[in-house]
Structures are given as structure tokens and as C-alpha cells.
Length: 197
Image 1 (tube, rainbow, N blue to C red):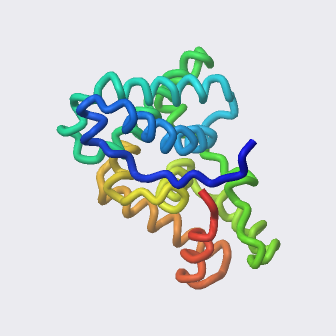
Image 2 (tube, helix red, strand yellow):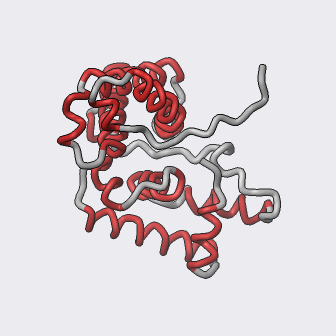
Image 3 (cartoon, one colour):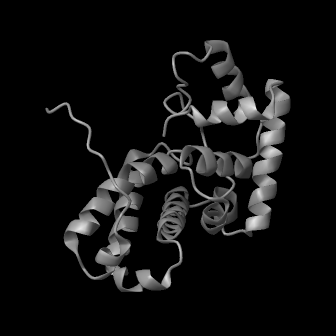
């Protein structure tokens, strides 16, 4: 197995819309892991996750002619995946309603909380505990903002809420984390930025 790093660039949505299979292939590679990791915040069922990722990416190709009418294709893909995943979770459980599933707590696993070596291990543990105090919606917004680096407008699109509501959710989550960790806001923001995707 070759030990090399593949530099992935932002997908070329125009070429995908025009039916360029190479551009779609690049988008597939670019988003596969991102969507899978996002889905892990809601379920650990690997087969279900993989099915949802595949379906969302296949839908992207099937609906490629509509891409020019979508303001934020990146947001559209995350939102589409989220909808597909929740639907599959609902079908599997046979009990939970969509609204209940949408409140599922995103889990920040050890792999997402491996802060760089220079960061104190005790601070890492405190961050984990602080994240656990957030509401499910706050956790998801923080994940999308700091782990996936989505804009507030994109997060609003994924969560199907207003941009103003997104700002409020993130602001309240940050204030709660700041209080829990007893550190300045700038230190909190830097700490969250050190978490790898």
C-alpha cells in the first residue's frame, strides 16, 4: 500500500452538472469520508451509514442537472444525506419518529477529540465533558461549524432552520462551553480549531 497523501480539491460543480464523470468521481472521493464521519454522530451502524452515503452521492449524480439552481451544493449534499440517514434510522428502528431521531445526540468520539500533542490531556478531557453538556442541536451545530467548517448559512441549510437561529444556537453553545471550561472565548475558539476533521 502506498503511503501518500492525496490532496483533494473542492468539487467542480459546473462540470458535474455537465455530466463530467471525472469531476463527479473527485466529488465522490471528497465527500465520502466527510458524510460518513458526520453520520457517525447519529449512528454507529456502519452498513446503514455506508448505504446512506452511497445513496446521497448517487442522488447527486442523478440530479446533477439541477445543480446550477442550487445556491450551495455543499449544503444541499449534507442536507440530503442527513434526510436519507434519518429516514434509514427510522425504518430500522420501526419506532422512533423523525422528530425524535433529529434530536439524536451527535457523539464526539475519541477520534474527533484527539487534540494535538501540545494540548494538555486534562484540557482535552474537560472539553469532552463540556461538549457532553450541550443539547443535541448545539452539538450538531458546533460539529458542522468547527469540525466541517461550514458557514452559518450552510449550517442553517443543513439543519433546516434560519441563519439567525443558527447564530443563536452556536453562540449559546460557545457561551456554555466557555463557562464549563472557565477559559477565555478566544482560547475556546482556538481549542475547537485544533480538533482535526
